[in-house]
Length: 126
Image (tube, rainbow, N blue to C red):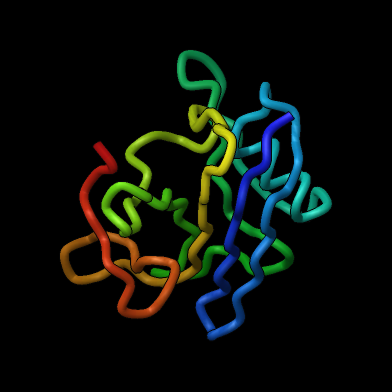
């Protein structure tokens, strides 16, 4: 078992933290999301060769127009958020890891908005 932290930010000021959630170390971020949302997640599954889920709704909040869900990782070594460059199914969980789902529109540069207003962002954790 590992303990993970997850923020779900609904884009309207409503944020819900799930801190130190104990889950099997074999789970990925998709399984964790399904668990935290009590399976109230809608996703499109892309089979081989991707074998990936594209999340389109969490807890009744659905992608609409330019608004969509994005997954972020907190980089403790940089004290900043990084937009995940890999799909949710490929995010392996580590003890103490912090992830965030953010619902919002993409910026003019095409990047999604970070999970918290004015949050520090970096392009990658490494």
